[in-house]
Image (cartoon, rainbow, N blue to C red; front, side, top):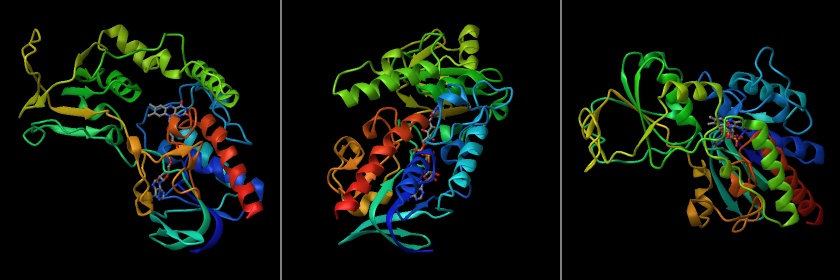
Length: 357
Ligand code: FAD
């Protein structure tokens, strides 16, 4: 399972597949290497109730729109994963899985992609490994003394196992708000955030985000400024979060200072119920960083924790492109629509460079 190709795509989630579509159309020789056992990328790994923020028709990959899901205005993660599976088949994308890329190396005229199934050589590498393989677990004093359970968003599936327990949910983003909303229906919850949570207006859903991202993309092309999606707030008021807010569970406390044997504690702040909050479980919804370990052999400088890019191309290794990780690889590039918008110019650039080489 090795060979020499024009392009190796690392990662077979939505960003890798969008790249695959344009590579196929350009007639290039390529392979997509994906570490998972089955198609769907991160959509196979979210919690059971995870849904898109917007209807299917607002979340297209290039070429073929996501079909609607019967009876579900906002498709479930399972539906999205099924769409990605069908998408691979429809365009006959050469995805090899499970294949984990261990390292991308400079091998002179080509890049060598070392995997647990042998080495591929390529003129270009597109890295599209997402973030779910790199959860961020902040360190707080007392973490080892705490006798309860600690888990991260990646480990969370459904609320039932927390029934009757005391749960602290940490984090001010969408994952935290959605997990808090459902856990609070079966458990006693405390929500803790580093800064006051910022909710979007009730009537803003993914359709509005889609429109804002579209205007930002147009502004970027025209070289002008446009409003930022985050200016709307961080937390989308999806139905479970709206319902939780109406139940009064969406009031957050500032971040605690340390963990204790039996819970979490604030130094110098006394709540009505004291300075310590006993709990059985802490759910860290503290985000992810780009999964870039496989790029370590290239020894790229990482100002701000990520490689420097112009568009999606690495400045320090111009044969490397990065797709889908977040705004630093293009506006809204960690969304379905954003993945296709950033994959297209990346593949056009590669095609042109192969042509003149
Ligand atoms: P992934 O889907 O993570 O795919 C990366 C793939 O690369 C995985 O299969 C992984 O196994 C593989 N991989 C990793 N490392 C290696 C390696 N070394 N070698 C080989 N393979 C590797 N997006 C939307 O578009 N619309 C929404 O409404 C939306 N709502 C969201 C709501 C929530 C609450 C959350 C948390 C996310 C939401 N997202 C939404 C974002 C979306 O789910 C992810 O950002 C998206 O899955 C990222 O796609 P990707 O292809 O970049 O990465």
